[in-house]
Image (cartoon, rainbow, N blue to C red; front, side):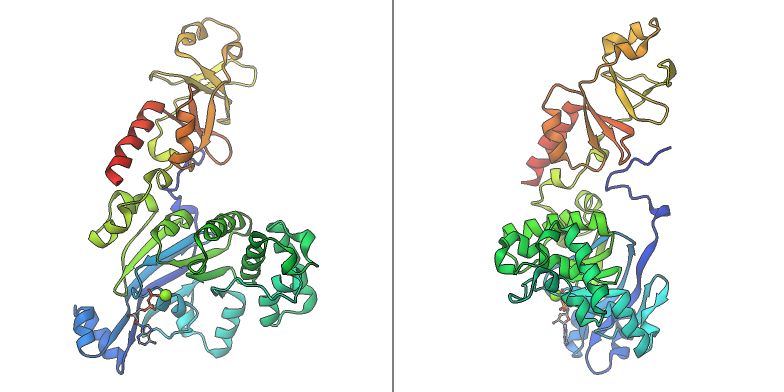
Length: 405
Ligand SMILES: Nc1ncnc2c1ncn2[C@@H]1O[C@H](COP(=O)(O)OP(=O)(O)O)[C@@H](O)[C@H]1O
Ligand SMILES: [Mg+2]
């Protein structure tokens, strides 16, 4: 069976785990080990505060799949930055393990730690401002220069990333010659032009004004399709979390209170704290085609056009695919009877259908549902994996949007 999944159904078995955090604790105070014992025995954050311990992290465990954007979301003071900074030990955790590709970072000596920071885990800081007197290329390679990469190597890397952001032709220009949006893209390129596969972005977009912030989110998603880094992205903004994240961990008082896909969290928030974030969310931007589709039950046609397989009971259009699952067209219900009689099933095929990817969000699917054409759902290879019943989708949106507001 080919893969057909929306963001709600990651294929866990095939994904490797790049970062794993196990039972991590960080306490600010004089005797953190005692505080860890108190936490493990069930004392609360407030009780520890009375003993002058500030709980930074309380038994945090997360698993970050390679190539994904993993969001850590929570209100100010919930421990997000502490977690981010523990990963490459800018802050030393008091208990627990941090594994990067299976290597326990908490056991690394100073030399190994330097190497890990250079080649494995990179922090992206908030400022995307460029150096005005340097060229675009010099700006793009700036981070690599700081890390001591030789000139030729860093220029080559900078050039490659400028190509990805579509600014290769501008490499010898100064930032002042670029539009505001282009300058932001160079800033993001500089941040992502690193050796490290794992990037930690702590509120990287939080200081940007909303329009530019949106552009940067789009650009990051686009870049990520090419670069496939493993990104741990910290934010206090749930909108940003669902927009960027493959998975989201929600933190409160130093602990992870819920972890899952945006769909899982919006569908069943664990508690009132989480529910409060999800209440005013536009659900059509969270739920995808896969979450509302019906089984496709295709009619399979062979290369010469004869019917190989006809599994179908439902009403509505019947999609026909080739043996690989690619859509050839569909049959209207009134054509199905003639199908068993004709020698040329392909001649009866209709082509006026729309196709959406299984991970397309419902706000993108809805306009198609409003047209008269049938809507098929396809996977990333263009193979049929379901069909959308327009009426039920529009009804779903009607119900969920009124509840959300
Ligand atoms: N160096 C420190 N000393 C004492 N308390 C700290 C220190 N750093 C962070 N904290 C406390 O730890 C908690 C988590 O902080 P932080 O990780 O910065 O939260 P966030 O990034 O989610 O806003 C807060 O209560 C904060 O006051
Ligand atoms: Mg912070």
